[in-house]
Amino acid sequence: MSAALRLDGVSFSYGPVVALADVSLELAPGERLALLGRNGAGKSTLVRLVTGLARPAAGTVWVGDWDTRGRPPDQLARRVGSVFQHADQQLFARTLEDDVAFGPRALGLAPADVAQRVARALAALELATHAREHPYDLPPALRKLAALAGALALEPAVLVLDEPTAGLDRVLRARVARALLERASGGAALLVVTHDLTFAAEVLDRAVVLDRGRLVCDESLASLLGAAARLAPLGLVPPPVAALSTALDLPGRPIRAAEAARVLARVAGGRAEP
Amino acid sequence: MTRLAFEHVTFRYPATEAPALEDVSLEVMGGEVVALVGSVGAGASTLLLVAGDLAPRVVGGRIEGHVTFEGPGPRGIVLPTPWTQLSGMAFTVWDEVAFGPANLGLPRDEIVRRVDHAVARLGLEDLGSRDPTTLSGGELQRVIVAGILAMRPTLLLLDEPTAELDPVGARSLWELVRTLASEGTAIIVATSELDALPAVADRVVWLERGRVAATGPAALLASDVLVVANLGTTVAAVWRAAGLPSPYPLTVAQAAQRWERR
Image 1: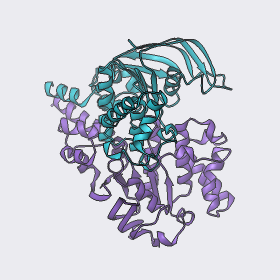
Image 2: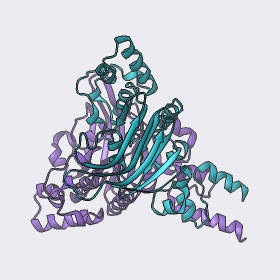
Image 3: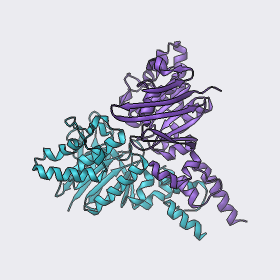
Image 4: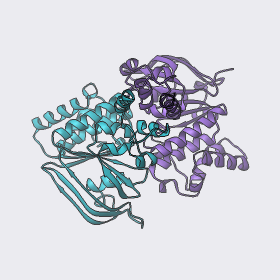
């Protein structure tokens, strides 16, 4: 299968500050990738390149068979749906449904198709009851979900999200998690920049770590999170479920809460009633 | 000694009828770290705005009840949106951190001392000459905290202070919160990073729809009622989901101890 997204030897600098150096990476349809690393490691720059907001100084970013260099961001939006770090500041329509409809309308879809996509996106994030509200009457956390709904409504091949859970409580995080898993099972490739490793563990399964602009790790998220000694130098800390699995030596070292609870119940139950 | 007291405080934002805070009573003393937990919209951010004298004074609205603040130093607040807190008047990180103390009219050598100290505490030495507008979200968040610390507040109000930080950066910020408390600062922090709180908070206040629903030591985060409300620590939640009996362990370390004793 051809890649949904491919970076070939990509470099980028802000003046003298090197943000990305020779990064190569391929993402298949349906893959769920966590882009991790310290503050300033180059993660948001990579997002800017993938969404066409910046052009690589060297190398090529491919979205499907498109070289991003030849495509303005509005055209790239047909294939890449993105939500930026402070997305709650980026809504502009008078109602939530209008805001979410902006993308699909701009794609030139028929009104009925637009309405369907908007309904699907709002339903996926349980926002339907807010459809007619003014986006700025919603609390910031729900505005963040609204921006995500806008990206979902594009039904893109690649979803690129920068810190989608910052400022969300656990209930809203779980909503985002469900919506993203559903899209991935439908074939969308996910590229999620996050510091929230608990969320990453619930939703994503591959980890790419950037360190000072270089790709230093590309492996399964479970194996990375289980290796506490390797995490610290990368600016990472094992999230609680992974730490619990390690501390209790749970079989299979689960990193997702529900799975850890199942394994824990089995192991504890096994001891109690042999 | 620093003291902040809320007595039966009710607050409504402009043009709203439903109170954002309702009948909240709370006392925080110097040296204490109080964590506000709750769902989105429960009132934690509003409580910080009221405690910081920004609501209703700056944002408008109506308040009932009494808020008393006594302290040798000022109060400082770190908002959840660091870029809105930039002065817009500084072209380097160092000058940004100096903006507050300079506005207090302090002598130059005192400003230098305070800024260097705050910059070092937040590990910003390498960024001193950078333009604040070119920083990443997490770097900026640390710059804002440094700028507030340079004002030497004795009451520090933090709203989601680690939202933009990488995990190691978040851990150092929580350590700094403990250090500041040990130096006598009173601290109120609103955070959704519940798993950090056992090591940070002396007291947890659970807000629900603007009211104080419960208050207690950090162990409250392992109580059945908070776990059910999705406000327990991850370890407590996993324990409960596994069907193991309460009391649930609060942290990985407690879980490991209990596991060994089985």
